[in-house]
Image 1 (cartoon, rainbow, N blue to C red):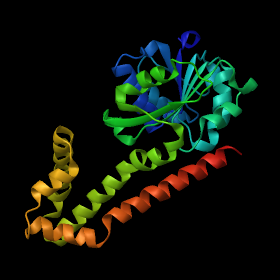
Image 2 (tube, rainbow, N blue to C red; image 1 turned 90 degrees about the vertical axis):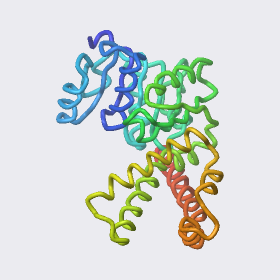
Image 3 (tube, rainbow, N blue to C red; image 1 turned 30 degrees about the vertical axis):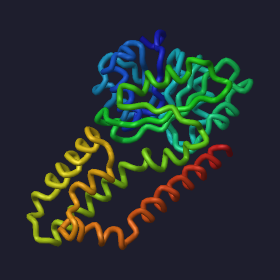
Image 4 (cartoon, rainbow, N blue to C red; image 1 turned 180 degrees about the vertical axis):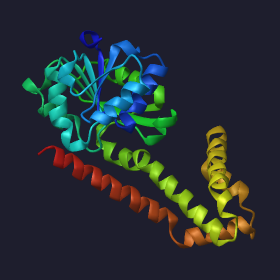
Length: 273
């Protein structure tokens, strides 16, 4: 198959594998028209077992590459992008935090003439095909570049085109946001234990609480209205919310998103060299 590879996923970690699984399951690609380039030998063995029919190689140079999904760490993106183009890629889709399309294009021979450069920020719920991904393409890319990227990412959740100027913010919100939700889950489990609930039941109880609440929000929208509907004046929920508001929960999340956005900008500057 290696002579016929069309899309090469460079980096076979959790996110790269999740996106590959979504592309295959949604029939965006067939196993015999996609490859994975992964440097770690043990991970290559795992990927070969997980994705029958997909070629798994140490480097993108080992296959013919028409398009590449760059799923490596931010500092490695410029070099990996150049390697992909050298292997034949005319479309690049990077999912690295902070690394701009300008940084990627600057790393390509002749400024990447004829190459589409697309940037995306998926999140970890892509692992269960409920992710949300932001996408953008630079002005030098073709008119169909965004449509192509949306097709590639659509198998693992929703895809939202956004201006690149807000990508550090979207990285901080939807990219890092799952970790905030998981941290809230940890806090609720701890709070339940402190209140005397059976420890062995708490994780499943809190998980069902979050899943059910998210499903209700997805169905009805209006988080403020849903909160008000469950908060009777002078009731138990009102007492709990008073504590959260007193701790400035809005300010805490605003600061968290701002800190993550600032770190994304730092990663982008580091990738520029």
